[in-house]
Amino acid sequence: METTYDVKVYKILTYKGARKTTYTVRWVVAGKRWREPFDTVALAEGFRSELIQATGKGEAFVIATGLPVSHRSKSASMSWYKFAVQYVDARWSQLGGNSRKNTAKTLTAATIALLRTQPTQFDPVAVRTALREWAFNANRRQDASQDVVTILRWVERNSLPVSSWEDAEKVDDVLQVMDTRLDGKQAAAWSRKRHRRILNVVMKYAIRRRILRTNPLPKGKEATTTTKTTNAVDKRCLINPGQAAGLLGWVRQRPRGGKRLHAFFAVMYYCGPRPEEAVAMRVQDVSLPDAQATDQWCELLIHTATPEVGKQWTDSGEIHEERDLKGRAEGDTRTVPGHPALTRILRQHIDDEELKPGDLLFQGEKSGILAGSVIRRAWRSARKAVLPLHVFESPMGKRVYDLRHTRLTKWLNDGIPPAQVAEWAGNGVPVLLAIYARCVDGQLSDLKKRLEAAGDLEDLPAAD
Image (cartoon, rainbow, N blue to C red; front, top):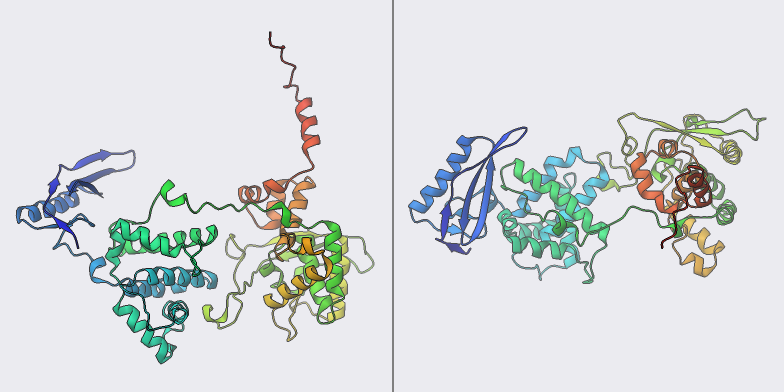
């Protein structure tokens, strides 16, 4: 811990803003400027008085924190591992399964980076597993095996204090470790961005609990230069009608559950729900026209999602977690029209499976929720069997989710207003346009005619 006696304390800076007045204590430690804002002048004067008293006593200041040696914060007395476990327990009931899993991954990476020494006596994979699957899982921690407990006790003894985050150089080192994969290569941009987002929430929690004074993570351009990502869809992943017909036709001929999976993929292709929304649908959520009307549209009611998160992350112990629609208010629903071709497919599917109104529309072999592994395996087999090798190895339809991307893009290209597409898709209009703007094409000729008709493209006089 490097200290100094080179300290200067300045007058309180008062800033009167439109909404409130802020009182900022300013001081310099070894040439580095420090600022601490307060909402009241009394708090500011009290803190400034502590600094002046420390200098009057000849007390050294810690260069990394800018505070007197005697000013030991909670961050100095609490290990990062202990704090991370407390954070998980405090937030567990407020998070969904996927958020719990992602939080555990981020805290595991941070904890490994904040060890005094690396655990060479343990297998690195075992250490990460112990942290991710047991230490940062409030439901399973008490059931950990003796081997896992031994590892976690070692981690707790060798964990640096939370105050390590107050050292800018240490923060950079930790973030560098978190941004690096186990093979030494840089992690994907979306992974780095997710780590930053979760860590920011963790730091805000530490500030509210008065464990840290400020958020130590980089801000502004410094925080985003290496984590730029885009949500825009790659046009290469879209599926043309001929390819879709070939893929769905192959799935239908699949001997094991082919017809059931064909109906599922057809719903994805014609209506564009998220996979977790499609597997949650029940027969009563489908409005079909009269049996004699084979050329009429059907309608799907989407109101529930059951993402597959893993039974260790759900309170029920089930692999899937039932929740409301993504980004929507509790209990919100939406309806989506289905092409007459889908009407025929779903009617045949319901009859063949002898489904009742309360049954799941798409069931697994044991009448439960259709497993994501089954869906992905069937889709990959279809791509491999139907597509030429160079297309199979391309991004085209590589994920089941690309069926949704294809449908939403087609709606936009067909001239359906973005507000309506957003309603059918369960997105906000800004998000929809940000994701699919690059995929909208085929309308340039019509747009040119509109611009010409507007009369604002008069010929300009030629230059002399």
